[in-house]
Image (cartoon, rainbow, N blue to C red; front, side, top):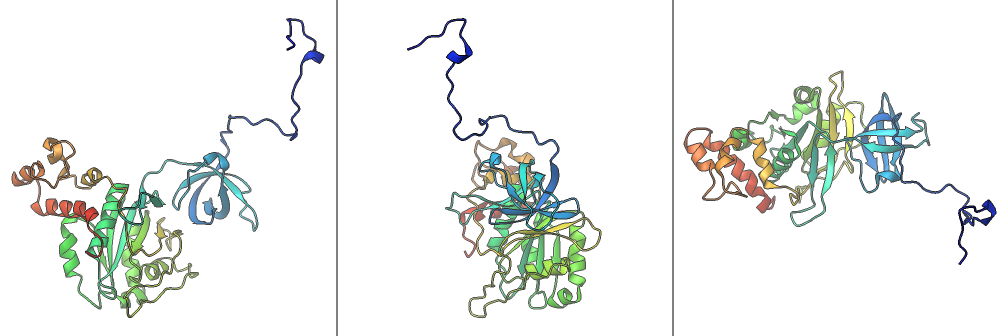
Amino acid sequence: MRRYGKHTDEDDIRSRPNRKGNRPRTHIRPKHEDAAEGMVLTVDRGRLTCLVEDRTVVAMKARELGRKAAVVGDRVALVGDLSGMKDTLARIVRIEERTSVLRRTADDDDPYERVVVANADQLAIVTALADPEPRPRLIDRCLVAAYDGGLDPVLVMTKSDLASPDKLRELYGDLDIPFVVTSREELESGTAAERVAEQLAGKVTAFVGHSGVGKTTLVNALVPADRRRLTGHVNAVTGRGRHTTTSALALPLAGDSGGWVVDTPGVRSFGLAHIDPSRVIHAFPDLEPGTANCPRACSHDEPDCALDEWVAEGHADPARLYSLRRLLATRERREGD
């Protein structure tokens, strides 16, 4: 083997030619300091529609992001062609830190966690009072997901002309969440959209609900300019609705309120396999101080739980403790139970 001394000639140095003719790869990634800021409006088969200033731009995820996926509501940084013209494509090079996350799994045994919406302020849980019948267990699961993800829940009850909202009001009254009750006549006249819009002004609100409850119809009333999705019909035999929204879509509210609505596909189940029950207590600030003396890893629904004594001493309403334990127990129950 040939060895080189201190005074080698350049001709003595052997180098391997780069057969591909390209520059060697580097681990140093560009910082993209000049990247434009945008918001993801919808995702469709690897193409993301983003709002950049006052125009929509179609983009794809940069390879350097790896498996990190952008979802509706994400704040992102984009480079490339940002004109928004037809057949142009930008690149998402950075996903900013999220302030909230709405997540779900297919069922309670599914380890795969899906992020539905990012950076939403509220979760509007839409339920019909009849046709189809309300499903309290599904509402409970949505509430748990909202509390776990950092969203404030709002309960929207539709079709009040078919049934009274009193039963649901009584069931969820102790949770101190806003209620909006609408009828089909109010929905058609536009007064329902006006009252719901009062809860949404200046905020990003994700809408979730069982198929057929009128969720997409309500969203279309809140966003009159968006008419590309047709509303579905409830099956008279099964009581189930036809899915009218196939992917989450962020839409600006009508007017200058600064609010956004995110329409999500109708759900028939809401898995909570990803939920850590210990985080749900954070949504009950009146009860949380009482957990200081709880045993380690307390489920807050066992004989030694300190919350029983805390409530008995008058620090909180017993109905609030009942509501907390009902929500915690919903992870062990199916929606139809």
